[in-house]
Image 1 (tube, rainbow, N blue to C red):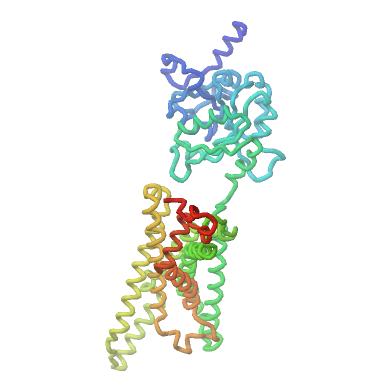
Image 2: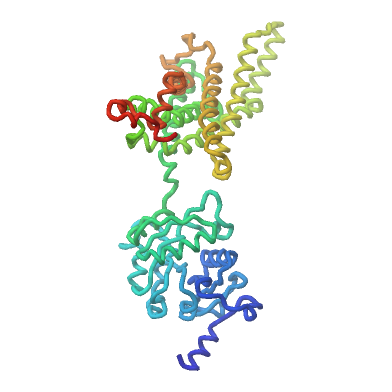
Length: 480
């Protein structure tokens, strides 16, 4: 390099810290480069500085770059590429062309591709593979693309610790894993660079674990809404000529929400019960569950949180009942009628017991409901041991289901005996929603009986039915 070239290279360097000149240069292993000065690049640079790395930004206009983290340097792309062995590419794919003239400077370097696309299959190959074709002498690693600028600024949160990486070079991937670990993230090696397209599709997924629960919730809500609309609103209009369509907004919604909530809470615990009976039938735990049961069990958390959401709506709708115009009008009209007719009404102790019990069970059930939702949060569940988490989600979960089911039974009381309850020969919605939780509770009761529970426990400890006839040693639990 000539003296003129060295002076030009030196003029490209801009220190963003007034003390930078007095600080000794860090070794190359502790210095990283970031190409890109957007939100993601700046946030990544800030995290790297906080972790103790020396950060050099590569920019097309190093003298006009601003808003970069305090303590970083900004150089031209060529000079920045020579300053560090590990380079983060925080630019979009359409701007990769500037890397082609830098092929010599990037030879042997590790390039970490952070880019994502706007939609799936936007390009014929993955961005990381395209980057590798542009700079064949570099070692390209796909990684950090599932993190947002916000998560990088605020550090790894409990819900966003995972960093997925892939690449051809084991040494290059190990270098990226070391950086991710130092930043507080948990890195997972997904294999070769051919997996890059899958990693680039991760940020494009919209609630993948929520799709089935949301479909179930929407389907149940729509089905019971139209069912109750026919039974309550249309039936009154056809048979009595009454227009009570105003009840759609509150009364009808306050019937649909608890029904859907109770059914979805039952769906959280039904797959576990079915899995227990399947293991009991097979006599072993070493056979895979059917795919549909696996998928069902994986979305139990989402089913439970949606059920809690419907329970919250039920509580809110119930709380506004006293301020509704229709309720206040009916109460005033009834009071005036009693006064005019000089009638008296005797206090019914049975009705009082039923009403207070109905409300009490509902409050207790909702309280446990909220507890289940809180322990589902990653920040809370990570602070619990497995036994504590299992106790809350299983034992208290089934107790919640029992209380909510009893709450619904008390709501119906003895109305199922009245012929007027079956409008157009159809049962009320609350009666239909009691079927599934009653079945789940009955099956769970069978599972906790001593003889069945003992067998299930042995199976889950590794015992297999019929193993005694094959090998006496196989009858011993595999897990002490």
